[in-house]
Length: 330
Image 1 (cartoon, rainbow, N blue to C red):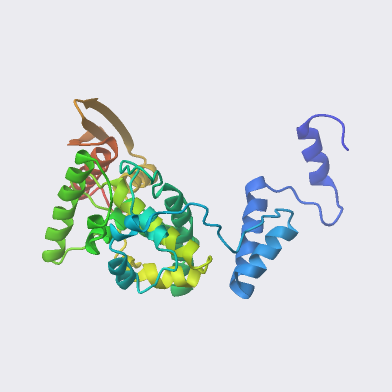
Image 2: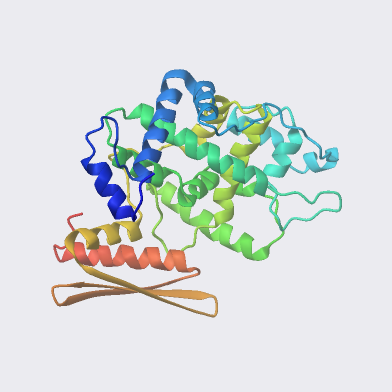
């Protein structure tokens, strides 16, 4: 123990000639631990990585079998096209009630069934993040950590998942009881269908005035969760089932950055001043973005059904204005 304040302690340690003492930031230590877990995963697989995590003191008991305590009437299963989903995924479910749960929205109510896809979505969100990250890591071994992170961000998001759901007609399998949700899904499905017909594909993010229904991304995640549980946590089976739905996956050549992030990074790099202002009235969100560059202002205002979409559209427009002025070389 050293007496005195922290500064004195750091000074003493800095001047100590004892081999092996280093002052490190907590994040650096955490990064090293994560790297060691990654090394264990790459060389020995998930079992070795989990063993190392336990050795570190994080004794997480992961069950290999999932108890199915809720019994569903077979009538519920007959209301869902299980065969279509199985043919789409090229996977045969042992427990068909998991399929029912994975396509049931919280708004859908039946006397003997109060469940919905939210728990499976929680599980599928995590496993898809892991599997897509692993795919990029193995596919592009020479890519920098920053670019790997960009690829993952462009592939693991609600926009991409929602597009995949519509492409595979999964939106037609969703059980819900919301007219507003129905209208949102229909409008978005028309957009994706018209884009597909013209040969366009959104790699990473959509930049249209049509809001992306979160429920469609949730649907992809919940189905992944259902496969994970049904296969007794076999991640390879999950990837075999879900990868065709998500293709084509983004590549370093086709990656498109999220407009808000791209604008913020550009302004930070070039020392531009960027301000967002938003308001909402009668269910419509309005976002105004202003970028000031050497006394000049570039202003764009967009409206959408939600703030996230309006902000994304405004950022996209101002990026185009900056590019036209020769100020966007990001």
